[in-house]
Structure formats: structure tokens, C-alpha cells
Image (cartoon, rainbow, N blue to C red):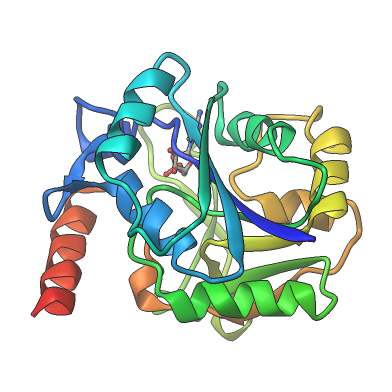
Length: 240
Ligand code: C5P
């Protein structure tokens, strides 16, 4: 019975600006992906990390990880496999690479390099305690509107509803799963539609309960240029 973390890192991160794939850009002088791998490996329970690299970037990612080894006392194994067209496909390829003795799987965005150990540990503990699926969730600061697209092109959208903010959560990663449940979700739901932005959503569609544990503000996703500024500041504060 082992715990593995799959890290989809095959996205281009175009919202961050053109250039190197997002996970390979530096944060505090070290690639974002390396921070994410360390954040998973830091959890004692995590035995194996599977990094899903850009499709033609496996060798480059392998070299990068070898150039930034884990501390000597950390025996976490790190595999690298090629990614797919969208996040869901990339996660599917990571799952396909897991050995049979893995029974708990975390899926963690490379783009959330600063997730604290306590959040990772809380997710693993909740799955080990019997939950099929667990996600870290944060209350929202903003009120959220549901909208209808503009009739013509370029016109304003129309608001169709305002979900009660107190009942909404912004979810983060790592999302934790009973391995058999996540495999089934990818087998059954994975064939439908556009590609999920979140693995727990696929488990919900199977009709299985998904539990929330408290998220953490430092588990935010680096998406836009301002997020990188914030991440640098968080890292500088940690190192101070
Ligand atoms: O695009 P977004 O920020 O939602 O991506 C979330 C995560 O999914 C990122 O870590 C990104 O590298 C990964 N991803 C992937 N394969 C894709 C697209 C995104 O592994 N084809």
C-alpha cells in the first residue's frame, strides 16, 4: 500500500505570457516544477512522484529534475512520462504509469509549487481514513456571477444568477483519491466531453462523495504574471 503523487506539468501556461512551458519557468531561481515535486516528496507518506512532462519534453524534464535532486534523506522515487492534449489526458497518462501496489493517489498541479506540507498531509490523512476523494477548498473573497454569453460578438454578457457565496469553495490541489476510484473515473468519464479541469469533478460524476479539507492561501495556482510576483514574495518570506 503506497501513496503516489501525479504532477501534470505539460501545460504551456500561455496566460503567463509566451516562452518556456509554465512548469519550467524559474521561481526563486529554481523551476516551478522542482518546487512542486519537493512539496509532494516532503510528505513522509508520499513514496513516488510521477511528473507528466510536455509531450516532447521528457528528456529535458528528466535532466532538470536530476540537476535539482531531492535532499539525500528523501527516498521518494521520481518518474517522468509524456503528457497529453489537455490536463485530463495528462493525468490519465500519469495514472497509467503507476505500479499496482499504489492505493492512494494525489493529483497536484505543477502550477501550485508552494502548497504547504500540512495541506498535503491533511489530504492524504482523509483518504487513508476512508474517503474516496478529498480536495482542499477555500472560501471565496469575491461574489461570483453566472453569466450568459453575449448574443452578438463583443457585446456585454448578461448575469443569470448569483450563487450564495457562503456555499462556494475555490478548490486547490493536491486532490487525493482512492486509486481504484480515480482509475474508474478516468476510464468511464474520461471518454466524454472536453476534458475536466479538475479530477474530483470526474469522481462527482461517478456519483461518489468528494470531501473538502481546509485549503491554504499559499496553495494558489500560478496562472497570470501577478501570481508569479506573489509567489516570489511568499518564497522570499519563507527564506527570511
Ligand atoms: O492550465 P491550467 O493552469 O489549468 O493547468 C493546470 C495544470 O495542468 C498545470 O500544472 C499544467 O501544466 C497541467 N496541464 C497538463 N497537460 C496539459 C494542460 C495542462 O499537464 N495538456
